Image (cartoon, rainbow, N blue to C red; front, top):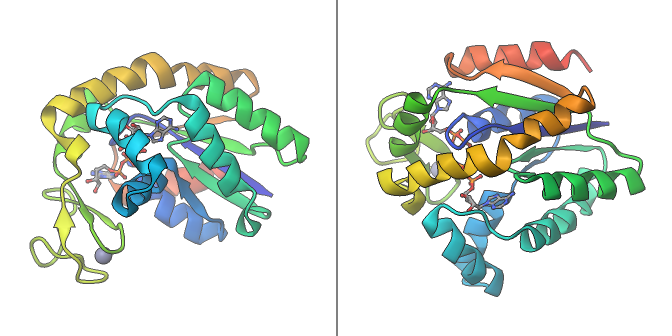
Length: 216
Ligand code: ADP
Ligand code: ADP
Ligand code: ZN
């Protein structure tokens, strides 16, 4: 049972690594941010509520997030393990997640904490581009697509997330420090955390993660 969590500030490379990790261990990649963006695109009630917070770089309220995360984790494909990306983000979310998983006897196996310094996070977030069709992530300098503005995988149009603007990014990093960083200590207490230097290039970060998880 490979239940994993990716922790780390916005821009640390969680989504980028999640694609590789989920392939390697054949577990679904669950990003609460992606779920919200899908709901916004489809114009659902949940999307409308979430958008208000996301635009300002604030966290979506715990009750909404916990509800969608629990629903997702009850789906069939999560029963053999999963990789959470961007959830939990508050101690309250982490506690609720532990309760939920304890009831099912499927505890978290490891928490992968990816650390990157603040200057680099700003550069990564502001240069991030995402494919409108398949969600693949690029960076204008670090990971440019072969053809400018187009996805290498599906040919879709690349766009900049509205919350990746300079002003919103600064607030998101503050929100991370206040609300999410305490989770490092929360998971430290149960000895489940792995610390990864996310400042290296993405291949090396991936190798470090796999080595730290061990061969399962
Ligand atoms: P997160 O999901 O943690 O917010 P992403 O995976 O979306 O982070 O990465 C943020 C940006 O940084 C993207 O544009 C991505 O292409 C780029 N990036 C990811 N990993 C690295 C890395 N190791 N070195 C340089 N740039 C990276
Ligand atoms: P990043 O890792 O680059 O910050 P995400 O896609 O994970 O981006 O999240 C985008 C936004 O979605 C967050 O700024 C927040 O508003 C909302 N969000 C995503 N996950 C959560 C969560 N677990 N709790 C609260 N808000 C969340
Ligand atoms: Zn694409």
